[in-house]
Image: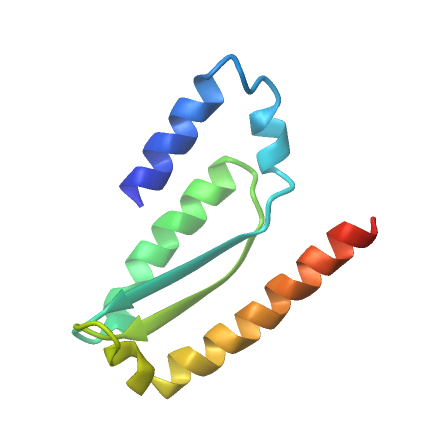
Length: 102
């Protein structure tokens, strides 16, 4: 989260991108987070902070997935998160297709 905020803040101030703040208002945002200890509850404050950030930038917050894993590939055992990620993937594909047709 800190990296995202730092980079967006830096880019907004960069004179090479004078219309970035306006452009960001059109960008659909999604968050994918993973944690090991009761992540669907403990991860909600993180999701809320992303929402506050996106609200401040007037960016639509479209969705999030919180998965449970502590080691590489352990996420593959989280069937709920995988199902939500598949749905999110379909949603993103539809957004891309609609923008390509516009």
